Length: 274
Image 1 (cartoon, rainbow, N blue to C red):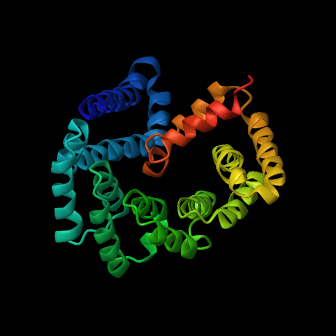
Image 2 (cartoon, helix red, strand yellow):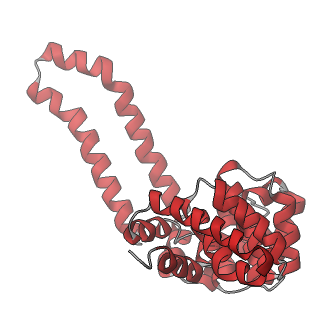
Image 3 (cartoon, rainbow, N blue to C red):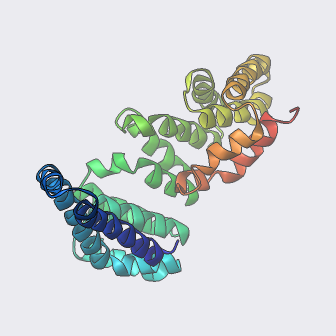
């Protein structure tokens, strides 16, 4: 992403709009109407000027961060963020999220765990905010037991928008730990009631292909739940293009990138006969 280009384009657009509001009334309106225009619209112009100043100050203060992101220089970005977060104690949500994601891009799950320990002391509520990032780090670091415990303790404390994904990852952790019966309970529940089509599809896929064959006594019942979940997804996303569009919205999320292979396999299963 070209941050400089976006910065310049935004400035030009905003300045043009401000100039039009300031100059145009003098040319197209009479003196009386122009005075009336200014009387009612000067607050809007002041707000736009303040937005212009605020945006430029924000960009100037964060220019190095934007430059490192644009270059995708992850080691340098980590050093920059570690100075901000760890050395200077600036545990802002934006910096913490970027630092944790940068560690994961570099496959440094241990560093994410160390960051989590510091956040637990400095801002424990942030652990729920970024539960998916810290939990995914455990899975990527092969700490499956730790992932199960982490997601289990946060299933009911995370925000509503993350709750179903935390439930899903708890089930996925159980599956990786070969606790198939417990994983089946989680995935069957989500396949039936989840309002998220991607979660429903992933749950149904694992039920059908991975869990059902390991539990022969209830295999047919599990497959029925999986097919019912599949049908729910197809009502929401009738074409594979709809599915691909939906998962592309998650492409910037680490917790989704970690299971991108399974998302693709789920898509093939869902639309095999389409």
